[in-house]
Length: 170
Length: 170
DNA sequence: GCAACTGGTTGCATAATGCAATCAGTGTTG
DNA sequence: CAACACTGATTGCATTATGCAACCAGTTGC
Image (cartoon, rainbow over all chains, first blue to last red; front, side, top):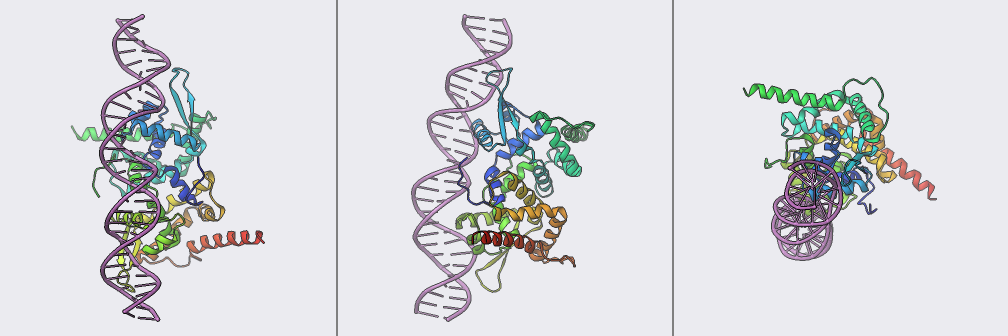
Protein backbone atom coordinates (compact mmCIF):
# COMPACT_ATOMS: atom_id res chain seq x y z
CA UNK A 1 0.00 0.00 0.00
CA UNK A 2 1.31 3.37 -0.98
CA UNK A 3 0.14 6.26 1.13
CA UNK A 4 -0.80 8.74 -1.54
CA UNK A 5 -4.48 9.07 -0.85
CA UNK A 6 -6.67 11.67 -2.42
CA UNK A 7 -7.99 12.72 0.98
CA UNK A 8 -8.39 11.46 4.52
CA UNK A 9 -12.16 11.30 4.22
CA UNK A 10 -13.46 7.90 5.31
CA UNK A 11 -15.85 7.63 2.37
CA UNK A 12 -13.10 8.48 -0.08
CA UNK A 13 -10.75 5.98 1.50
CA UNK A 14 -13.44 3.32 1.44
CA UNK A 15 -13.90 4.02 -2.26
CA UNK A 16 -10.19 3.62 -2.83
CA UNK A 17 -10.59 0.15 -1.35
CA UNK A 18 -13.60 -1.10 -3.31
CA UNK A 19 -14.36 1.66 -5.75
CA UNK A 20 -13.98 -0.77 -8.61
CA UNK A 21 -16.23 -3.28 -10.21
CA UNK A 22 -14.74 -6.46 -8.82
CA UNK A 23 -13.28 -6.27 -5.31
CA UNK A 24 -16.61 -6.21 -3.55
CA UNK A 25 -17.98 -9.03 -5.71
CA UNK A 26 -15.07 -11.25 -4.70
CA UNK A 27 -15.79 -10.48 -1.07
CA UNK A 28 -19.49 -11.13 -1.68
CA UNK A 29 -18.74 -14.59 -3.07
CA UNK A 30 -16.50 -15.36 -0.13
CA UNK A 31 -18.99 -14.09 2.46
CA UNK A 32 -22.23 -15.40 1.02
CA UNK A 33 -20.94 -18.20 -1.17
CA UNK A 34 -18.28 -19.53 1.16
CA UNK A 35 -15.74 -19.70 -1.64
CA UNK A 36 -12.13 -20.06 -0.55
CA UNK A 37 -10.10 -21.11 -3.61
CA UNK A 38 -9.00 -19.31 -6.74
CA UNK A 39 -10.88 -21.70 -9.01
CA UNK A 40 -14.09 -21.49 -7.00
CA UNK A 41 -14.00 -17.72 -7.24
CA UNK A 42 -13.10 -17.79 -10.91
CA UNK A 43 -15.80 -20.19 -12.08
CA UNK A 44 -18.47 -19.58 -9.46
CA UNK A 45 -19.09 -15.91 -10.02
CA UNK A 46 -22.28 -14.96 -11.84
CA UNK A 47 -20.48 -12.12 -13.53
CA UNK A 48 -17.59 -14.00 -15.14
CA UNK A 49 -14.45 -12.45 -13.74
CA UNK A 50 -11.31 -13.19 -15.72
CA UNK A 51 -8.32 -14.82 -14.14
CA UNK A 52 -5.90 -11.91 -14.42
CA UNK A 53 -8.36 -9.52 -12.74
CA UNK A 54 -9.09 -12.05 -10.02
CA UNK A 55 -5.38 -12.58 -9.34
CA UNK A 56 -4.80 -8.84 -9.24
CA UNK A 57 -7.71 -8.17 -6.88
CA UNK A 58 -6.78 -10.99 -4.54
CA UNK A 59 -3.31 -9.46 -4.30
CA UNK A 60 -4.59 -6.01 -3.58
CA UNK A 61 -7.14 -7.26 -1.04
CA UNK A 62 -4.31 -9.07 0.72
CA UNK A 63 -2.18 -5.93 0.66
CA UNK A 64 -5.09 -4.13 2.31
CA UNK A 65 -5.40 -6.83 5.00
CA UNK A 66 -8.88 -7.75 3.89
CA UNK A 67 -7.79 -11.29 3.01
CA UNK A 68 -5.11 -13.72 4.05
CA UNK A 69 -3.85 -16.71 2.16
CA UNK A 70 -2.74 -20.06 3.53
CA UNK A 71 -1.46 -23.18 1.82
CA UNK A 72 -3.93 -26.00 1.42
CA UNK A 73 -2.40 -29.21 2.86
CA UNK A 74 -4.22 -31.35 0.30
CA UNK A 75 -2.51 -29.74 -2.70
CA UNK A 76 0.82 -27.99 -2.79
CA UNK A 77 -0.30 -25.34 -5.23
CA UNK A 78 -3.70 -24.78 -3.75
CA UNK A 79 -4.26 -21.81 -1.51
CA UNK A 80 -7.07 -21.07 0.91
CA UNK A 81 -8.15 -17.48 1.17
CA UNK A 82 -9.67 -16.25 4.41
CA UNK A 83 -11.54 -13.09 5.27
CA UNK A 84 -10.03 -10.91 7.96
CA UNK A 85 -12.04 -9.15 10.66
CA UNK A 86 -11.86 -6.02 8.52
CA UNK A 87 -13.65 -7.81 5.70
CA UNK A 88 -16.12 -9.59 7.95
CA UNK A 89 -17.27 -6.22 9.26
CA UNK A 90 -18.44 -5.37 5.76
CA UNK A 91 -21.50 -7.54 6.40
CA UNK A 92 -23.72 -4.62 7.47
CA UNK A 93 -22.63 -2.64 4.43
CA UNK A 94 -23.36 -5.61 2.18
CA UNK A 95 -26.77 -5.91 3.82
CA UNK A 96 -27.63 -2.27 3.27
CA UNK A 97 -26.23 -2.28 -0.24
CA UNK A 98 -28.25 -5.36 -1.09
CA UNK A 99 -31.41 -3.87 0.34
CA UNK A 100 -30.90 -0.59 -1.50
CA UNK A 101 -30.16 -2.38 -4.76
CA UNK A 102 -33.20 -4.60 -4.38
CA UNK A 103 -35.40 -1.58 -3.90
CA UNK A 104 -34.10 0.63 -6.68
CA UNK A 105 -32.40 -1.48 -9.32
CA UNK A 106 -33.61 -4.11 -11.81
CA UNK A 107 -32.62 -7.11 -9.73
CA UNK A 108 -33.70 -10.64 -10.49
CA UNK A 109 -35.92 -12.22 -7.86
CA UNK A 110 -33.82 -15.28 -7.18
CA UNK A 111 -30.67 -13.24 -6.68
CA UNK A 112 -32.27 -10.61 -4.46
CA UNK A 113 -34.03 -12.95 -2.05
CA UNK A 114 -30.85 -13.23 0.03
CA UNK A 115 -30.69 -9.46 0.31
CA UNK A 116 -34.33 -9.26 1.35
CA UNK A 117 -33.91 -11.93 4.02
CA UNK A 118 -30.76 -10.29 5.32
CA UNK A 119 -32.54 -6.97 5.59
CA UNK A 120 -35.53 -8.50 7.37
CA UNK A 121 -33.20 -10.26 9.79
CA UNK A 122 -31.71 -6.90 10.72
CA UNK A 123 -28.68 -6.29 12.94
CA UNK A 124 -29.21 -9.43 15.07
CA UNK A 125 -28.92 -11.59 11.99
CA UNK A 126 -25.85 -9.65 10.81
CA UNK A 127 -24.17 -10.16 14.17
CA UNK A 128 -24.85 -13.86 14.06
CA UNK A 129 -23.57 -14.05 10.50
CA UNK A 130 -20.36 -12.28 11.47
CA UNK A 131 -19.88 -14.71 14.37
CA UNK A 132 -20.27 -17.61 11.97
CA UNK A 133 -17.79 -16.09 9.56
CA UNK A 134 -15.28 -15.56 12.35
CA UNK A 135 -15.66 -19.21 13.28
CA UNK A 136 -15.36 -20.41 9.71
CA UNK A 137 -12.56 -18.15 8.51
CA UNK A 138 -10.64 -17.17 11.61
CA UNK A 139 -11.11 -20.29 13.71
CA UNK A 140 -12.93 -18.34 16.40
CA UNK A 141 -15.27 -20.04 18.84
CA UNK A 142 -18.89 -20.08 17.78
CA UNK A 143 -21.37 -18.92 20.45
CA UNK A 144 -23.66 -21.89 21.12
CA UNK A 145 -27.36 -22.31 20.43
CA UNK A 146 -27.79 -20.22 17.30
CA UNK A 147 -30.03 -22.51 15.29
CA UNK A 148 -29.44 -22.90 11.54
CA UNK A 149 -26.57 -20.87 10.10
CA UNK A 150 -27.37 -17.61 8.40
CA UNK A 151 -25.81 -18.79 5.18
CA UNK A 152 -28.06 -21.86 5.27
CA UNK A 153 -31.11 -19.67 5.90
CA UNK A 154 -30.26 -17.48 2.92
CA UNK A 155 -29.62 -20.51 0.77
CA UNK A 156 -32.96 -22.02 1.81
CA UNK A 157 -34.70 -18.82 0.72
CA UNK A 158 -32.96 -19.02 -2.63
CA UNK A 159 -34.01 -22.65 -3.07
CA UNK A 160 -37.59 -21.78 -2.18
CA UNK A 161 -37.76 -19.13 -4.87
CA UNK A 162 -36.24 -21.45 -7.45
CA UNK A 163 -38.67 -24.24 -6.50
CA UNK A 164 -41.64 -21.91 -6.84
CA UNK A 165 -40.39 -20.75 -10.22
CA UNK A 166 -40.00 -24.34 -11.40
CA UNK A 167 -43.54 -25.05 -10.19
CA UNK A 168 -44.95 -22.15 -12.20
CA UNK A 169 -43.13 -23.31 -15.30
CA UNK A 170 -44.88 -26.69 -15.41
CA UNK B 1 -29.21 3.37 -19.56
CA UNK B 2 -28.65 0.21 -21.51
CA UNK B 3 -29.86 -2.97 -19.95
CA UNK B 4 -26.83 -5.17 -20.42
CA UNK B 5 -26.04 -5.92 -16.83
CA UNK B 6 -23.50 -8.46 -15.74
CA UNK B 7 -26.03 -10.09 -13.42
CA UNK B 8 -29.25 -9.35 -11.56
CA UNK B 9 -27.54 -9.52 -8.18
CA UNK B 10 -28.34 -6.42 -6.11
CA UNK B 11 -24.75 -5.99 -4.98
CA UNK B 12 -23.48 -6.26 -8.52
CA UNK B 13 -26.05 -3.77 -9.77
CA UNK B 14 -25.20 -1.39 -6.94
CA UNK B 15 -21.57 -1.61 -7.99
CA UNK B 16 -22.51 -0.82 -11.56
CA UNK B 17 -24.02 2.38 -10.17
CA UNK B 18 -21.18 3.60 -7.98
CA UNK B 19 -18.38 1.14 -8.55
CA UNK B 20 -16.14 3.97 -9.64
CA UNK B 21 -14.04 6.47 -7.82
CA UNK B 22 -16.19 9.55 -8.23
CA UNK B 23 -19.95 9.00 -8.29
CA UNK B 24 -20.30 8.40 -4.60
CA UNK B 25 -18.04 11.34 -3.76
CA UNK B 26 -20.29 13.65 -5.74
CA UNK B 27 -23.29 12.33 -3.84
CA UNK B 28 -21.37 12.71 -0.58
CA UNK B 29 -20.70 16.39 -1.31
CA UNK B 30 -24.32 16.95 -2.16
CA UNK B 31 -25.64 15.12 0.90
CA UNK B 32 -23.18 16.32 3.53
CA UNK B 33 -21.93 19.50 1.91
CA UNK B 34 -25.23 20.71 0.52
CA UNK B 35 -23.64 21.51 -2.84
CA UNK B 36 -26.09 22.03 -5.68
CA UNK B 37 -24.15 23.68 -8.55
CA UNK B 38 -21.54 22.45 -10.99
CA UNK B 39 -18.96 24.94 -9.78
CA UNK B 40 -19.52 24.16 -6.11
CA UNK B 41 -18.99 20.48 -6.79
CA UNK B 42 -15.97 21.15 -8.98
CA UNK B 43 -14.08 23.44 -6.59
CA UNK B 44 -15.41 22.24 -3.26
CA UNK B 45 -14.30 18.64 -3.39
CA UNK B 46 -11.31 17.68 -1.27
CA UNK B 47 -10.20 15.24 -3.94
CA UNK B 48 -9.99 17.59 -6.92
CA UNK B 49 -12.34 16.17 -9.52
CA UNK B 50 -11.80 17.47 -13.03
CA UNK B 51 -14.56 19.13 -14.97
CA UNK B 52 -14.95 16.50 -17.69
CA UNK B 53 -15.30 13.71 -15.15
CA UNK B 54 -17.76 15.75 -13.12
CA UNK B 55 -19.86 16.51 -16.20
CA UNK B 56 -19.81 12.85 -17.19
CA UNK B 57 -20.81 11.60 -13.75
CA UNK B 58 -23.59 14.15 -13.34
CA UNK B 59 -24.99 12.93 -16.64
CA UNK B 60 -24.83 9.29 -15.68
CA UNK B 61 -26.31 9.95 -12.23
CA UNK B 62 -29.19 11.75 -13.92
CA UNK B 63 -29.66 8.85 -16.33
CA UNK B 64 -29.88 6.59 -13.29
CA UNK B 65 -32.49 8.84 -11.66
CA UNK B 66 -30.23 9.60 -8.74
CA UNK B 67 -30.16 13.30 -9.57
CA UNK B 68 -32.37 15.80 -11.30
CA UNK B 69 -31.40 19.11 -12.76
CA UNK B 70 -33.41 22.33 -12.79
CA UNK B 71 -32.64 25.77 -14.14
CA UNK B 72 -31.59 28.34 -11.60
CA UNK B 73 -33.83 31.42 -11.96
CA UNK B 74 -30.98 33.73 -10.89
CA UNK B 75 -28.74 32.78 -13.81
CA UNK B 76 -29.74 31.48 -17.21
CA UNK B 77 -26.81 29.09 -17.48
CA UNK B 78 -26.81 27.93 -13.91
CA UNK B 79 -28.37 24.62 -13.02
CA UNK B 80 -29.45 23.29 -9.65
CA UNK B 81 -28.92 19.62 -9.05
CA UNK B 82 -31.20 17.82 -6.63
CA UNK B 83 -30.98 14.42 -5.02
CA UNK B 84 -33.83 12.04 -5.72
CA UNK B 85 -35.36 9.74 -3.11
CA UNK B 86 -33.19 6.97 -4.50
CA UNK B 87 -30.06 8.97 -3.65
CA UNK B 88 -31.35 10.19 -0.30
CA UNK B 89 -31.79 6.58 0.77
CA UNK B 90 -28.06 6.12 0.44
CA UNK B 91 -27.66 7.90 3.79
CA UNK B 92 -27.53 4.67 5.83
CA UNK B 93 -24.98 3.24 3.43
CA UNK B 94 -22.90 6.41 3.68
CA UNK B 95 -23.14 6.16 7.46
CA UNK B 96 -21.96 2.56 7.55
CA UNK B 97 -19.28 3.19 4.97
CA UNK B 98 -18.00 6.17 6.93
CA UNK B 99 -17.97 4.20 10.16
CA UNK B 100 -16.18 1.28 8.58
CA UNK B 101 -13.63 3.54 6.93
CA UNK B 102 -13.01 5.40 10.16
CA UNK B 103 -12.33 2.16 11.96
CA UNK B 104 -10.08 0.47 9.43
CA UNK B 105 -8.51 3.07 7.18
CA UNK B 106 -5.99 5.89 7.74
CA UNK B 107 -8.57 8.66 7.99
CA UNK B 108 -7.78 12.16 9.18
CA UNK B 109 -9.49 13.14 12.40
CA UNK B 110 -11.20 16.25 11.15
CA UNK B 111 -12.68 14.46 8.16
CA UNK B 112 -13.86 11.44 10.10
CA UNK B 113 -15.62 13.24 12.93
CA UNK B 114 -18.77 13.52 10.80
CA UNK B 115 -18.75 9.77 10.24
CA UNK B 116 -18.27 9.12 13.96
CA UNK B 117 -21.13 11.41 14.93
CA UNK B 118 -23.39 9.89 12.29
CA UNK B 119 -22.64 6.42 13.57
CA UNK B 120 -23.28 7.43 17.18
CA UNK B 121 -26.56 9.03 16.16
CA UNK B 122 -27.65 5.72 14.68
CA UNK B 123 -30.81 5.09 12.64
CA UNK B 124 -32.85 7.84 14.34
CA UNK B 125 -30.32 10.43 13.22
CA UNK B 126 -30.23 8.96 9.72
CA UNK B 127 -34.02 9.14 9.47
CA UNK B 128 -34.00 12.75 10.57
CA UNK B 129 -31.24 13.55 8.09
CA UNK B 130 -33.19 11.95 5.25
CA UNK B 131 -36.27 14.00 6.22
CA UNK B 132 -34.20 17.15 6.09
CA UNK B 133 -32.79 16.21 2.70
CA UNK B 134 -36.28 15.53 1.36
CA UNK B 135 -37.33 18.97 2.55
CA UNK B 136 -34.27 20.67 1.11
CA UNK B 137 -34.03 18.86 -2.21
CA UNK B 138 -37.53 17.64 -2.97
CA UNK B 139 -39.57 20.38 -1.32
CA UNK B 140 -41.15 17.92 1.09
CA UNK B 141 -42.65 19.07 4.35
CA UNK B 142 -40.28 18.91 7.31
CA UNK B 143 -41.67 17.18 10.41
CA UNK B 144 -41.71 19.81 13.19
CA UNK B 145 -39.68 19.97 16.38
CA UNK B 146 -36.47 18.31 15.35
CA UNK B 147 -33.94 20.60 16.96
CA UNK B 148 -30.77 21.59 15.09
CA UNK B 149 -30.36 20.06 11.65
CA UNK B 150 -28.19 17.00 11.30
CA UNK B 151 -25.95 18.75 8.84
CA UNK B 152 -25.46 21.56 11.37
CA UNK B 153 -24.67 19.04 14.10
CA UNK B 154 -22.05 17.37 11.92
CA UNK B 155 -20.61 20.72 10.94
CA UNK B 156 -20.43 21.75 14.61
CA UNK B 157 -18.46 18.60 15.36
CA UNK B 158 -16.06 19.42 12.57
CA UNK B 159 -15.60 22.97 13.86
CA UNK B 160 -14.97 21.65 17.35
CA UNK B 161 -12.17 19.39 16.15
CA UNK B 162 -10.63 22.18 14.13
CA UNK B 163 -10.82 24.57 17.08
CA UNK B 164 -9.16 22.06 19.38
CA UNK B 165 -6.42 21.47 16.84
CA UNK B 166 -5.81 25.21 16.52
CA UNK B 167 -5.64 25.44 20.31
CA UNK B 168 -2.99 22.74 20.50
CA UNK B 169 -0.93 24.45 17.83
CA UNK B 170 -0.50 27.64 19.86
C1' DG C 1 -17.48 47.07 -23.74
C1' DC C 2 -15.06 44.27 -20.58
C1' DA C 3 -13.86 41.19 -17.01
C1' DA C 4 -15.43 37.58 -14.27
C1' DC C 5 -18.42 33.73 -13.88
C1' DT C 6 -21.63 30.12 -15.75
C1' DG C 7 -21.61 25.01 -17.09
C1' DG C 8 -19.47 22.66 -19.68
C1' DT C 9 -16.37 20.41 -24.25
C1' DT C 10 -12.15 19.02 -26.73
C1' DG C 11 -7.66 16.87 -27.51
C1' DC C 12 -4.38 14.08 -26.04
C1' DA C 13 -1.55 11.20 -22.78
C1' DT C 14 -1.66 7.73 -19.37
C1' DA C 15 -3.68 4.05 -16.63
C1' DA C 16 -6.98 0.47 -15.88
C1' DT C 17 -9.62 -3.23 -17.61
C1' DG C 18 -10.97 -7.34 -20.37
C1' DC C 19 -10.28 -11.33 -23.28
C1' DA C 20 -7.96 -15.28 -24.92
C1' DA C 21 -4.17 -17.92 -24.89
C1' DT C 22 -0.65 -19.79 -22.38
C1' DC C 23 2.29 -21.58 -18.46
C1' DA C 24 4.68 -24.58 -15.11
C1' DG C 25 3.99 -27.36 -11.21
C1' DT C 26 0.92 -31.07 -9.04
C1' DG C 27 -2.00 -34.93 -8.53
C1' DT C 28 -4.50 -38.81 -10.72
C1' DT C 29 -5.26 -42.54 -13.76
C1' DG C 30 -4.22 -46.32 -16.71
C1' DC D 1 5.78 -43.94 -16.36
C1' DA D 2 3.09 -41.52 -19.77
C1' DA D 3 -1.07 -39.06 -20.53
C1' DC D 4 -4.17 -36.04 -18.71
C1' DA D 5 -6.73 -32.91 -15.92
C1' DC D 6 -6.37 -29.53 -12.24
C1' DT D 7 -3.79 -25.97 -9.49
C1' DG D 8 -3.08 -20.80 -9.35
C1' DA D 9 -1.79 -17.93 -11.93
C1' DT D 10 0.96 -14.78 -16.14
C1' DT D 11 1.46 -12.75 -20.82
C1' DG D 12 0.22 -10.10 -24.96
C1' DC D 13 -2.71 -7.18 -26.95
C1' DA D 14 -6.99 -4.48 -27.73
C1' DT D 15 -10.32 -1.60 -25.66
C1' DT D 16 -11.97 1.53 -22.28
C1' DA D 17 -11.67 4.75 -18.48
C1' DT D 18 -9.35 8.41 -16.33
C1' DG D 19 -6.75 12.75 -15.81
C1' DC D 20 -4.90 17.13 -17.17
C1' DA D 21 -4.88 21.42 -19.41
C1' DA D 22 -6.69 24.26 -22.52
C1' DC D 23 -10.53 26.11 -24.54
C1' DC D 24 -15.45 27.63 -25.47
C1' DA D 25 -19.82 30.23 -25.78
C1' DG D 26 -23.35 32.38 -23.30
C1' DT D 27 -24.49 35.45 -19.01
C1' DT D 28 -23.98 38.83 -15.56
C1' DG D 29 -22.27 42.85 -13.14
C1' DC D 30 -19.86 47.04 -13.63
